[in-house]
Length: 213
Ligand code: GAR
Image (cartoon, rainbow, N blue to C red; front, side):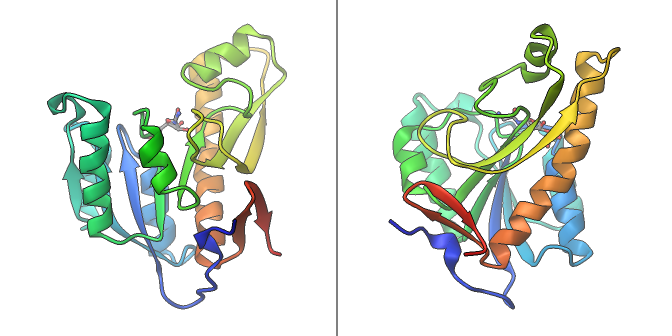
């Protein structure tokens, strides 16, 4: 089966919705790369499941509409996801970008947006799905660590990988020094992938990622 991001679309900015839970440094680089015309996209809205996420302030500063859907006010994952679906669809995005969005999503939600939703994860998947990836790489004595950008599928951090970047682990690395170097690479890689989307260069066919077919 062929999925949507294959629409050739060179002029119109790609409408995207960004989901966050925290600081939003990846969101900031996307805002900045749109502003300097590196990415041909428009952020229609930033949605956070945490009312105090600093990324909301970044969006407001850039005059981007924001929405808070406080997950603690919902009695089930399904009811939260139903509201999230409703709010996302209001903006009719062609791409949903998870940028430090730290909620597990229900299978129905993920399947509904399959092929149109991407995530960035701070490890070289399939290694270290889930949390504390930098600590786990250090504890394992890995010589390399990194990041992955992938389509979101029903398997947590398990969807088809679009791009990975490796970062060497240095002898005196701590969790925070390693996280900082990975994050610096995230800020280069995520805009790159979003630009591929906006140029219609990515396709997902039978769960295989194809660039420039
Ligand atoms: C980033 O390192 C991102 O890869 C990670 O959260 C951080 C968010 O930073 N995401 C995950 O761990 C998802 N499983 P930011 O809010 O400054 O962009």
